View 1 (tube, rainbow, N blue to C red):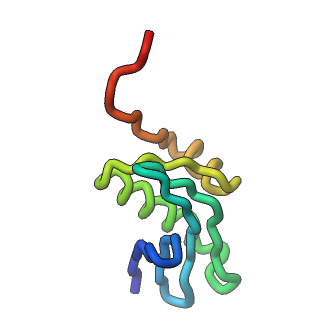
View 2 (tube, one colour; view 1 turned 90 degrees about the horizontal axis):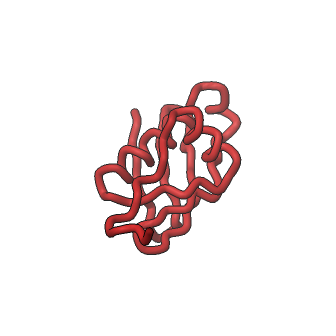
Length: 95
């Protein structure tokens, strides 16, 4: 069983997997999502759960147009490893 949820009341994403739930705490500011912490319970560690929740977050952000701002070290490393860059905000840039 895999279920990805944006728990807006708790400001966190949740990924339910067989054996537990991985979470990613975030702060929202407009269309920016700061990923502050990624946590995987002991029973899920070493199974790729942290990577799976990050992949779900990126997919959801791409659909909604949100910009991911990785804050915690895992989110930063995952984004760099997978070549994911936050989408640029719309509008023109001053020259």
